[in-house]
Every structure is written in C-alpha cells, then in structure tokens.
Amino acid sequence: MAEQHVLINEIVSDHAERMLNLKKYYPFFVLCQGTLSQYKEGKFADLDMGYITLAVLRFFIDENNFNDRPVEYQDYEKFMIKLLERDFDITAETVELTESKELAAHIFNKINNDGKAFSFSFYDPESRKKKTTRIRLIESNIVSGNVVYYITADGIEFYLDTKEVRDESRISTSQLLLEKLIKTENFRGGIDVVKRINNEVSRLKKRRKEVISLMASDVRAGSAACDEFMSSTARWFQEERQSFEKNKNLADKAVARIRSEGGSSKRFSEINELMTELKKAIINHSELIAETAELSKLSEEMINRAKYRSLRQTFDFEDIIGRIVRGGRPADMGYIVRPFLMPKIHKSFAPMLIDNMLKGTSDDGLKGEQVDTSVAELSFKFEDEKLDILIGHNFGMLFTELLDRLKRWNKLTLKEFVAILEVKFGEEIYDNRDFYSFLVHLAEKESYSMKKMLDKQETVLEGMVVENMTDSQKSEYSDMNFSISFDNEEIVIRDGDAGRMITNMIFTTELA
Image 1 (cartoon, rainbow, N blue to C red):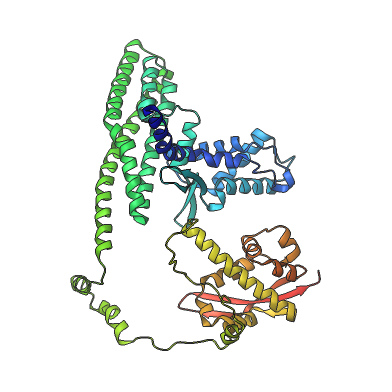
Image 2 (image 1 turned 120 degrees about the horizontal axis):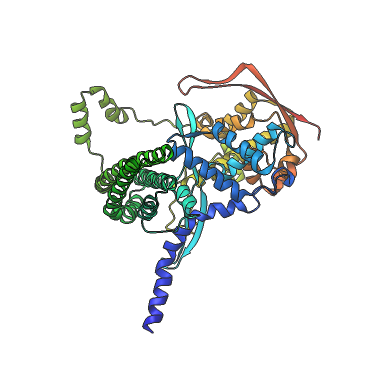
C-alpha cells in the first residue's frame, strides 16, 4: 500500500515539471506538421521543415554566440536561399529569385510564429488546473533603428538536447569529454567542445537576463524563475570551476610535451586555438558567476520594493514634496496642485447616441479598456491576447461601417467617413489609436473584394475583419467590391501635438 502511495505521489507531483521540460520540443513538432502543405497550393510541401528548423537554429547559434553578433533579416535571407539551393535544388532554373525570397520569408514567419510565442497547454494534477506556458525560438529587438533577431535560451537548449545527453550540469558533462579529448590529443574535437561550453555559458547569461525581465513585469513569477535558475545553475559553479582548472593544466602539459617533441605546425595551431577558446570560456564562466551573485541581490531588492509598494495604500504627499525639494524642481508642484484647482466638470454627449439608447443597443461603440470584476476566469488570456481581441473588434466595426456607407452612396471620401464617425462615436474617435492603425492597414491594398476576402484573408486587417463579422453581415456584404485612391494634397486630420497628419482617400464601389 505504501509503495502504491509513493508511485501515485511521484506521478502527480512530478508531472508539471516533466511537461515544462517537454515544452521546448513543442514548437519543433508544430513546425513539422504540414507547415508548407498549404503554401502556394502545396508547391513546396516536400521540403523538410524539421531539417530547416534545426538549420536555422544552428545559424543563429553560430552568429549570436560564436561570432557574438545579432542577426538582421538580410543575413537570414541570404543563408536560407543558399540552403534551399544546396539541399533542395531550388535554384534560379527552377524557381525565380522573387519566389525564393517569398518562401524564405514564409519559413521565417512560421519559425518566428508571426512574432508571437508558441502556446503549450497541459493539465497539472497537483493544482487540478489546466496551465498554459509559452515558448519562443527567436526573439527580436531594435538596435540603432534596425530590427535584429536573437535565438532564445529555450531555442539553444532545444538544439543542444537534440544531440547531447541531458545532465544536471551540461558544462561539467562537456568538460569530461574535453578532458578525454585533450588526453588523446584530439585538439580539433576539443575546440568544438569548448565552443559548446561557451555556448552553454552564453545561454545561461541569456536566461539570467530573461529572469530579470520577468521580475520587472511579474515579481512572483520572476522570483520563482530566479529560485529555479539559482538551484539549477549556481550550485554547480564550484565543480565547473575545478573542471576548468583541471583541463587548463592538462592543456598546458600538452603544450609543453608538443614543444619538447617538436610537433608539427598543424598541431601547434590546433593547441593554440584550443587554449584561446579555453581561456575565453574561463573568463565567460567567471563573468557568469559574478552576474549570478548580482542576480541574487537584485532579486531581494526587487522583492522588497514590491512588498513596500503593495503596502502603500495612499499617495504620500510629503515624500513627493521632499523629492521635488531635493531635485530643485519647484515647477513640478504644478502636477500636484493643478488637479485640485482645475477640476474638469464639463462633460460632452453625442446627440446621435440618443437614437442608440431608444433602440436598446448596448454595444454600439468602440470598446475602451474594460475592468474585469469577475472572481475567477474559466479560461485565462494573456494581456497581448486580450489586446488582439479588442483591436479585432474595433477593426471589424470600422470596416463594417465603411461597407454600410458605400452600399448606400457608392462613393465616399475619408473626410466624409471621419465626419460620420465623429457624429456616431463622438470626438473620442480622434484619440483612439486603433482608428489610425485601421487606416494604415486599410491603405495596404488598392482594392478589396469581399468574396475573395471571405474565402482567403491575405492581410492582418482582413483576418481580423472576417473574424469579427457576424454571419448576417457576411451575407449582406458578400457581393461588394471597392477600390481606394489617394489624394495627397488634401489633409483630413492634422494634429501637431500628437504628430498626426492624414491625407484624403476616396473609396469607390465596383461591379462584382
């Protein structure tokens, strides 16, 4: 009976940890399942996405970690076109260069999951809840005005796990192999192992940065991630440092032996390269130890700061005034006094909303930020997912309003459309960021066919609009087509404070 209890307990308590360990494999198998079967009517369905995914990850590891440089999209595109030509015979004779670039872009969007994280869901029997964790293989950043890409720590770990045996300390495992290679004077193999060690150290540094970023947004989750990082990384530092010293001594002895025996120049070159890489690994490892010690202190400070913020229920005027005095900025007192001296008591009400009230409509406006007062949610959604739903609703409403006006009048200018929206939704439309984003997306194409749009969505706007249209609206507007022309001379909206300037557009219906 006791054995049965231990068995069940291990199954339940260890399940969540096992699933979190498996999550790094999830994107690979998602990418392998029919990623290219729907692209270009299956023209490239025979391409092996598993091989392509691993090749792209290896390319990013080489550039980010070995060469210590970020990857721009042009670098990836050049690499992918060469790979397709070399390994799949997609050459200029079989496919035009433009189509090869489109294929490379499609593959990159799939591996990058269109800029979103892969969501991996599993049931946790210990908490009796379904949990969702997210994982990225590639992440992006803006450096000097250019978008650059990096492989994530999970991406590096997945790539290494496809070949190496999992161990509590991959650095120690690699150093055992390095010791054997130095003893057998296989210096070329030793160089590859040391590069792998450097790669692992870089992954741990990247993971440390990710823990800090998580703590900045969610102290509780960041604290748990910090504890996990310290327990799985820091406790092996002493053993790893001893292994570095041992292998450094072995390499020094090998150098002395080769010199006394008068070895070949090739062996001298290999042992020198090995020594250089080993010294670089020792320096990087020392930096990781120092940065991990700083992480522990930073974690305590951020936790204490979060506790202090959670206990402050009121605005501390004395503290703010003290800061203003110490900073010598008396003008900042205006931010405190002005709200009390100039309360905003005038409210505006759009007359057209009366019609909506009489008709009993309860949701005939652009949605603003909503506060969730429910005690618990049946299905959890991340903030970016909630934002996508909100934007999709607004895009669908604006596009449907445009179709409704065009069906009545056949021709409409942006100036007229804005005036209609102002009457219907009030002047708040000018402060709604989704409105300006909608116009930018709408201008991507010069014409729209609702029939084609319902069959296949080619842009982000079309996808959101179709998703947020009701069945009756799809049926009502299914035969509509309209084109867009631009009048760059006439300015419809100019807001110097916000930096907005929108020129006129002319919408014209066309025969189906």
